Amino acid sequence: MKIFDDLFRRIEKHNGTRSSALLAQAMASACSDRYTVSLASVCAVLDSQSKEVFDRLVRIAQEPDFSNADQDRALDKLRALGFID
Image 1: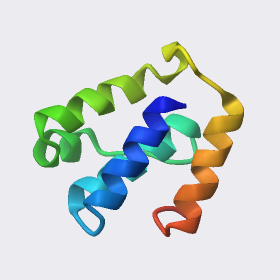
Image 2: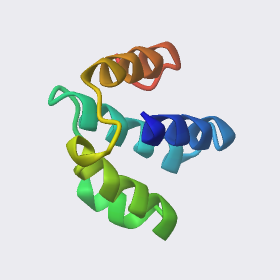
Image 3: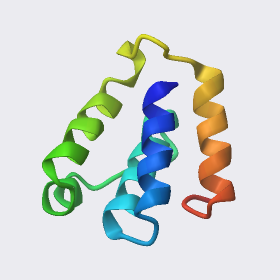
Image 4: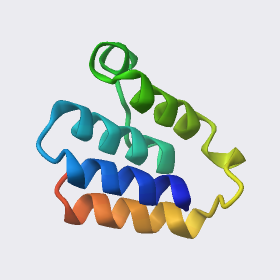
């Protein structure tokens, strides 16, 4: 999914920042109800551009290229990068 590709580029570009970790957690939450993200943190940490991406994650099933298989691949990559268990 394009949104995941964009997010992984952003996370890797800004690796080690709180906003990258929060976006990674939000991506995991968009893929599985096993993961959660604090809305208070979203408000306090993310800039306006990242909040727009977060808003797209909230409506992930409406993305034109939505794919459950891509969600699974995103979770695998987040695990490999150490963002989730």
